[in-house]
Length: 159
Image 1 (cartoon, rainbow, N blue to C red):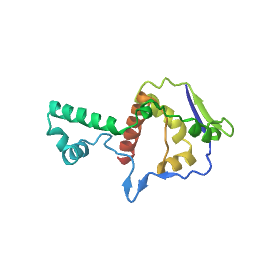
Image 2 (image 1 turned 30 degrees about the vertical axis):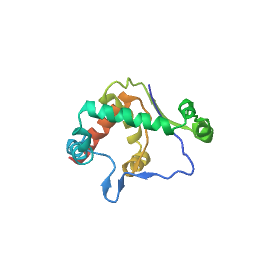
Image 3 (image 1 turned 120 degrees about the vertical axis):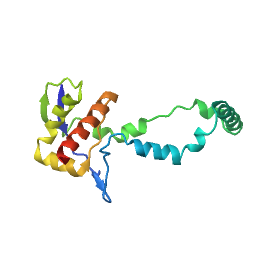
Image 4 (image 1 turned 135 degrees about the vertical axis):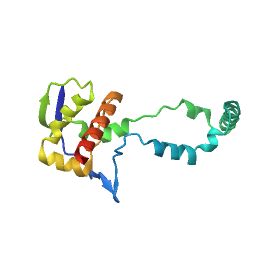
């Protein structure tokens, strides 16, 4: 089931899809040349060291860290209660508008394209999304399919 809802969140500003002439979304989805560039320029020293040498370095670094580090800190668990309380109003179902409900399996890229069309078929939302970035919370497959759908739709618009 795909449910399209909207809720205005106060005191937040939209993130532009294009900033300083640079498109936020990578049309290549995975840019092999960019990955190669960073691997060569930034991480080349890491690849020049054998695993055994690196393992020995890690072991020595860990021993030095424990000598200066308070071991009680290792037992501390991050608590996010304050962040959750601060965002409580955003999580409420008040002021939510249901735009559409559609039976949808959401198991493939075409399924996600159909679900995204619930939003893009509304002119005001389409104009907003054409100029701004919208964060999406999804599991791994949801992220993958949405990214593929956006890439496919963008390529279709470019032709």
